[in-house]
Image (cartoon, rainbow, N blue to C red; front, side, top):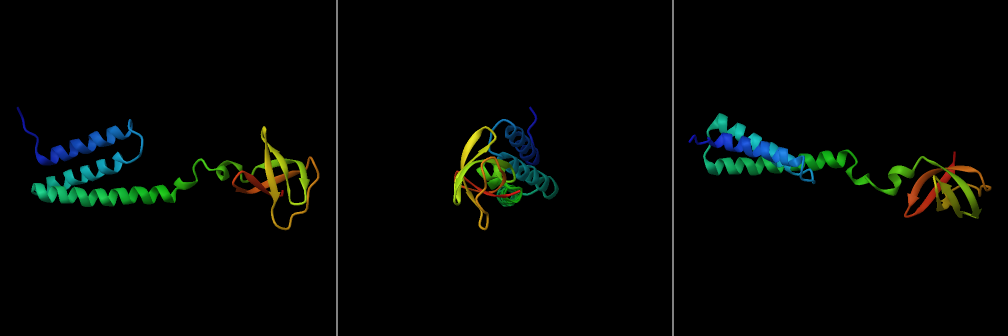
Length: 143
């Protein structure tokens, strides 16, 4: 029976973790898989002892996870599935307004609404643009 060398074990572990990423939700194993592949490459080139291999993996894992978190926040990870993500910029039809507060129809739903600063009360049937969302209240401005 053939024994695997240390670098082969690290490379295999990295490939297994990256394959598991496709089945296990969370987008976390990919970063550990990359760290494991990097450790395997370092072990192949530098023939490091077990302690140095574990230390290399820990450092590479920290770097890879930090990189993953940075990429996630840079690409708008925090705005997914928020009310603002799909409503701002759409047009709503005014149902009624009294002063600054009213109701509008957007798509197939009625929404509470208020006017943005400096806007005058619109008439029923007017089309206004959603400029912000405050809780479940749409903030509207003229198109």
